[in-house]
Image (cartoon, rainbow, N blue to C red):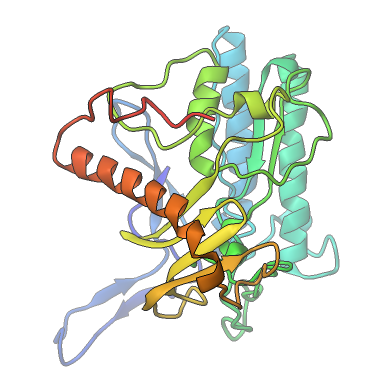
Length: 340
C-alpha cells in the first residue's frame, strides 16, 4: 500500500496559484489517492485518502489482515503480517464506532480503537487455531509526538494535534533523546516466550529481522552486513541479558548520538522535532541512570566510556564504506551478523 505523494486527509480541494514565481499555473490541491499492489502486478487505486477514509482505514486493514491470515492458514502456508496502524498518529480521527467512546477526546478514542483492533487480530489467531504457533510483536517505531498546535484547523474536524508525553525522559520523535528512542515492545509466543516477563535490556528494532527469520526456520542472508542481533536466546528466557551493548542513533545520514549500556554521548544538539541541529565541539556524555533527561553532561570524569563507543562507531562506519564501495568484508573482518 502506498500513496501517490505525501497524503494529507485534511487538504483543501481545488486549485491555487503561486504568483509571481509560478505565473498563472494552476496548482491542484486535495487529498491524494492511495494504491494497493501485489508482486508482479500493476498498482490499483484503493481510495482518495481524505478524512472520511482515514477514519475507517485502520478497521479496513485489520479486516484485510484477518482475511490474509485465514487464506494462508486454509492453504497450509506460513504467513507474515506487518500491520502498521495509522492511528494514533496525528491527525487522530476515530473510526465511527469509537467516536466519543471514552468521552476524553479523539486521542483517547483512537487508543481504545487500536486496542480493540489488536484484540481482533489475536481473536482471529485463536479462531484459526494457530495462536500457539504464531509470534506476535506489538511495538511502536518512535517516541511521542512533539507537534502541539491546537486547534490545528478552525474548525477542526481532525481533532487537534497533541503534544505527546515521554514519561521521565526528554524529547520526542525525530530526535536522538531517550524520549524519542524508547518505545514499548510486547512479544507473545505461547509456551516459548515466558509470559509476564518484563525487562529493561537493550533491544533494537533491527534485531527483529534475524530473530524472526531464524525463529521461523529461515536463514539470514550471508552476502551482506546484518545490523541486527539474533535475540532468540534472550526472548526465550535462556539468557538474562540481551547481549546488545550499543545503539547508534542516526538522523538522516548523520550519526547524532551513541548509546552504550547506561551511557549516552551526543555529538549534536537537537532538542525537538522541529528544531535545527548543531554540532558539539566535543561529545556531551550522560549517565542515563543518574540523568534520564540528558540535561547534565559528565564528560571528563568518565571519558573512558568513549572507548567502547568509538570502537562501535569505527566498526559500523567500516561496513558502510565497504558496502558503498561494492565490496564485501572478508570473513576475518566481518561478522556474518552481530551476535549476543
